[in-house]
Image (cartoon, rainbow, N blue to C red; front, side, top):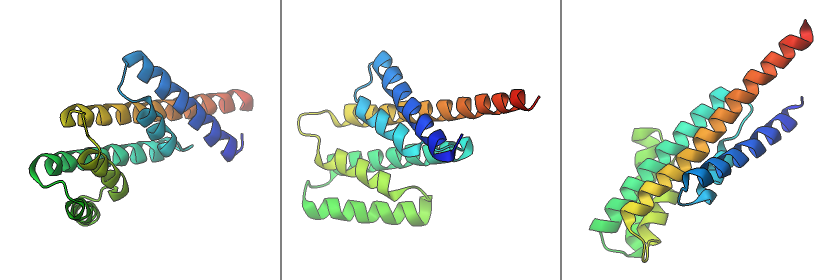
Length: 156
């Protein structure tokens, strides 16, 4: 199977799995689960695990910092900008975490929670992302395992 076909198949099945599992579990946002599955899908299971953990790590860091800014600092443009600056600096120099994902989650929480509980949104954003990540990891590992078995059978 070509690499492009393999990645396309894994990505499609990962998204389907994330949407199905998310629907079964009644998660808050199927969108975030599907996006997480799509973004980390690769043909190599080691790379998917690495990307998945980094994405989850970035989501958690951004969520916690977003909660802090939302509850304790003024809701002003300069504070959001300072928050992203601080987040990118901390992620890139101290934590070795993906600053882009952390920044997106930070901004979603610190600027976009009108009428929504911040702790509810934060918790569900982490859960929804986790569903997508776990789906992509399980699909990729299963796909590679089955592909290896098929190749062994063919070579006998």
